[in-house]
Every structure is written in C-alpha cells, then in structure tokens.
Amino acid sequence: LKTPEEMQSFLIDLCSVRELNALSQRLWVASLMESGKTYAEIVETTGASTAIVSRISRMLASADGSGMEKAVNRLKNQE
Image (cartoon, rainbow, N blue to C red; front, side, top):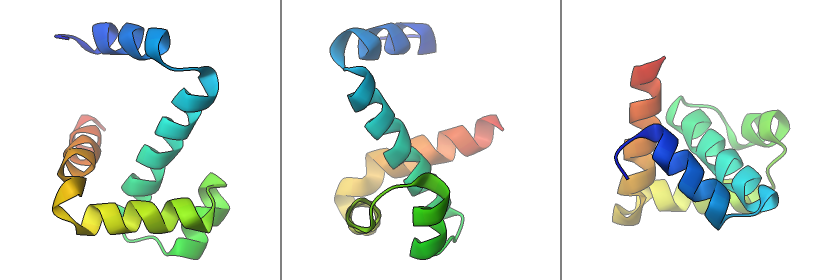
C-alpha cells in the first residue's frame, strides 16, 4: 500500500465500523499518553476503558510498541 487512500480503502474493506473505531481510539490513547496525559484524563477524554489504557501503556513501554510509537510520531509531524 503506497498511499494513505490505499490504506484507508484496505482498512475499510478489512474491518467493521466497530473495529475501525477501536483502532482509532487506541491510536488516540497512545497519542495522549505520549503527550503526558494521565490515565484518568485519557479515560475521561476518549471514553476508553482503563484496561485499554493500561494495555496501550504497557505496549508503548515494550519493544512491541515501536509501530504504534512510529504512527503517533508521524501523526504529530503532520499537524
């Protein structure tokens, strides 16, 4: 996939609306974590469960979180 439009089309074909919303919410959670927000602020802002926030936090702290971290950084650079 070479363009954002191709990726969007692929994800729409692959995922249900609920799954796309969950992916979006997790990326939002990661972005807020990277900006220094607290768990409570993130839960209140995003509506994500504390379990999701905790999972994203653990993922970002591990080597497995490098993909999410890269995505968050790229989105920040687009702003």
